[in-house]
Amino acid sequence: MGLPGCETTDWLTLGGPAGSKSVGGASAAASAPSALAASSGNSAARGSLSSLGRAVIVLRINFDVFRVRVARGVFSESGKIWNHLDEEAIPADTALLLQRNGLRAARGKLDSWPPIKALLEAETQVETSRSSMMVSNGLPLTVELDPRPRTQVLFLLRADGHGAGRTYAESTNSLRIEYEIPLTDTNAVVVEAMPEIRLPQTAARFAFAPDGLIEHPAQRPARVLRELAFRMVVGPDEFFVIGPSSAAHQAHLAGSLFLCEEIEGRQFESMYFITPRVVATGQSRGP
Image 1 (spheres, one colour):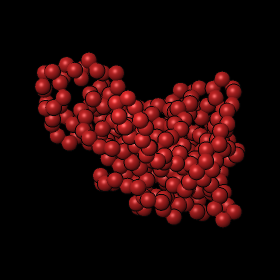
Image 2 (tube, helix red, strand yellow):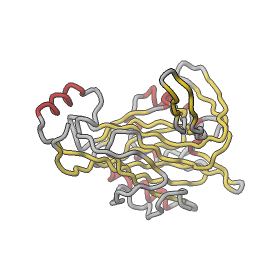
Image 3 (cartoon, helix red, strand yellow):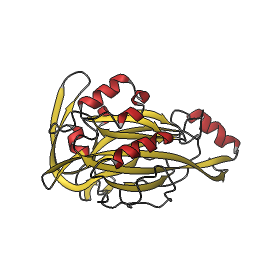
Image 4 (cartoon, one colour):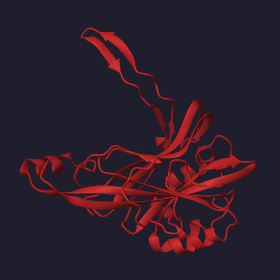
């Protein structure tokens, strides 16, 4: 079964050519900054570059997203897949916090995909889907995990040991990916990924102000779970993953809401293999 709104393809090839079209499972706006403009904290360098009017290489990033859905326990209760991945790509305290909330993240190399593929082939039921998105403006990429609106209760375990719960009516779940290109290696991508709960769209409204009538356009508010964000550098021959931890099937935790589901009375869980690729598109003399 394919992911709704996504292009279904052969999941056995990771990070292969995926084209540059927009797919329903992912969204982002598009314009074209330079490699410097894509990096945060470099305003001085950007100002110097634009004032000199020097040509720079315009870069785009292609995100190739593989979703693999299997029976409960294949990812969350076994280390076979995770043994081929580097979980030390994120700090230990971040990894522990994610695991307590039912999530797990790691980085992998493309040559580690064949043994992972072999393990998945040994499973009796594997459902996959793939989507691709080209972005170039530095705005976050949203990967839609489940498009079905529903009322859900999220219970968040924080790093200080305290917990908090909240109900989100008619909401959907997404993975938010922010990114930048490091100046030290323009072939790598620094990614910061986090769960996101998207709320129902608000209607446009008007309000009176001293200067006249002001329009407040329709919006799609979201609850970004930055408490559960993880950040890592992904090289040109690498990918990163987010999957369920052993706590994922505990009701109301983020791992349960975002990566687990029940279909016809059976429990399933998903893992996302995401491959970012930097694509040079030419030269620009603009700022």
